[in-house]
Length: 420
Figure: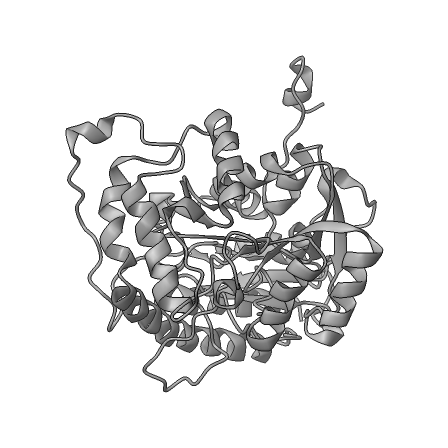
């Protein structure tokens, strides 16, 4: 019996995909500085200098007043800076503009999502399959809403046609839809007219569209030679920021490449921000106070665009390199990633037993390389479904620096060769 189950009152809490694989890798001797290991399972981007990017922050000075608790919704100066950034990047010329009252600061993306989940009512909440592994437990813990899965078809490149989504919303009575855009793990992206239609549907059919936009600067669908970065946000298509039921979540973790700062924000109608502030008051108590002031300089729109362009240029090269090498190994990629820094890899054409994502991961550990089995992305709250999909898939990250990618792919190549 699991030890946790022997302690009265406690349940067994499952590990997310990344936490699980890192736990197993450490048992095999992995640590971040190990020169022989490659972590192609990581959910974070490389954090060092990139050509053309603004200088990285290397020091933080703390005002003694910041040793005190900060406001639950964050410092107003930072909230307004986030609002100004979105207005400048996505809402020029629009009558309705974000203000600090439309912004809540929190301690990372999971905290932001947890606040939202805690503020939801007794509704049907739609979510896609596959999607972000951490959504599973988030959708399990809060009992007020019922999670409703919407299966994405690989034959449609893991995209949801607008007509199909409309049928799901109306037929299942969805009052909210939670998605990552671009999607973790498939890298697929909703943008342009299609994203505008989704935003309009939220108002027309009265459901809340909750968009996790943490990878919205890792966009590869535009012109690779453009001097303007491609950045995608539903903020561009919202008419009235206080009436449109669209909630956006982002932060410094991915797009700014500061995962250790654990600083995120939520944008939405003022009433939603008030509700999640109440949830934050009993869930987490507020974000890191000293870092909020230091983050202000990172949100200058000109600096944001400079950072995004450097990130896209660098990560596009890594994406192309990984996609080419993975295909050379006989691994299928049904849809090349249009965003994120992940490849959703179909292992079904590899020899047994490594055509299974879990075995592929376990055998990879013997070669000192980490991947994430695809079954973790079959978001299945409370194990309502007995069958888990995506056993023949894995997620391969091109978040690490190029030298580690090369080492990791060499390791996968050796592992596959041993089984042929």
